[in-house]
Length: 585
Image 1: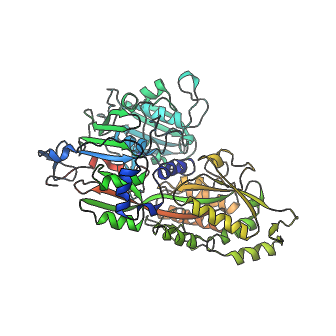
Image 2: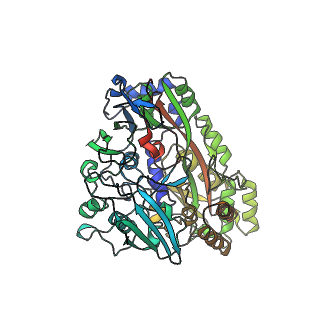
Image 3: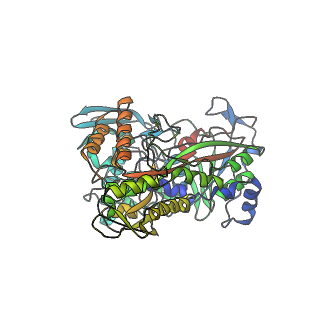
């Protein structure tokens, strides 16, 4: 299970999302999708017969009833990675990497489809916070836990995962290479990882500063015996040789440009996987994946939501369609460190003028009826704890924004807006996301700015560009991705000055007090209330403007069971071992 975060890991999640995302209008008709399968497929994916259809013997399944023995599933996933380490910045968020990691790499705690967090009984026998000052967590590893190469899962794996993800320069890989993790959140609070008194199967994690979200750590756990040999950032090049398994599956083969084959791990000590084989075929995009499922060439795929596609797929015999959240939304962030948006008045005026409802309606005319404004950053619609904050921002309040600027001493000279000091205001918008709604979102933001008299330039940038230079004058507004998280401190980190996840740089006593409150409180109702207070402050200070959220479709051949749409970063693969074909299907 790939751990959740905010900021850097939002980019990871969005990278996976955007690689599979196309305009939903292209999916409105099933016939269009079917045509895409034959007309637009640019890479030849493996199209294998499903051995499960010809197999008649049964075995007890994960659902409790009999299941088909020797069953296979073929998935379609975009991506052709060169590194299979899901925690490295260069590979994190790749759909196929995420799916394979869910199948082979163990996690101390796992995140369910509703973003609930629970201990992984197949890896840890116990995990206990034994001290609060300093914070110390003791883990006991299941004595059966063994990598498929015969090496026991041990304290060494916890130590390596911490060191590689800590962000500390004192830790180095082979030949002195620095580690470049996708995120160091949480790991940067650890002071040491040591072997417990019971030997290498016991792990003592001591924190330099308390981490209330320690359950997010070591998810997944990397094999130290491989990482120390091949390197963290670029060494996991072959999932067959570089990814020993401590999960229900092991990588049997990998063909670049084609895909990966997973088979049951013979060294696995947990309940046997419901399927004997999982084939992950590379597809160029989500449209081809959906069309290939409809045509029977693939067994499952995730698609962007559109009502036309949902209706057509539900009407197709032999398919099951489930709708779920992605946990991801696009966010407009103002640079409060330097440039014109150090002015809270200007930030608020622009965010008042953007009309998110009109943006959602426009998306709906193209088929994205599921797109909706996000009115809460801490929880997304459908998640436990979601509270609509009813913000005044993002509601097309152009007149209110103009009046606010006039009262603050800004003035219009012709079509241009001048600051109280007389200088013309020029704004640069950097766009990190390239999803299906990006064009509409950019148009809406630019139109709002220009309607207020702001001169706007735009540029498309690689994910993380704004994060790499948060204090630079190179951008004034940034369109980035955010992900909802079951670990509240990651949400708080997006508004914590000096945090790598903090893009805006805004700070105030009220904001810092709210962040401290979130960081101190244990999980529960009080912490959810603290999150809502932090979200309310972000709205009141116009730090950023959440734009639109979209659900996603999961389409599966009806003979399979155990699938579910999920807001977790691993998507439906969060519980890949439970997939099966019930007997008689």
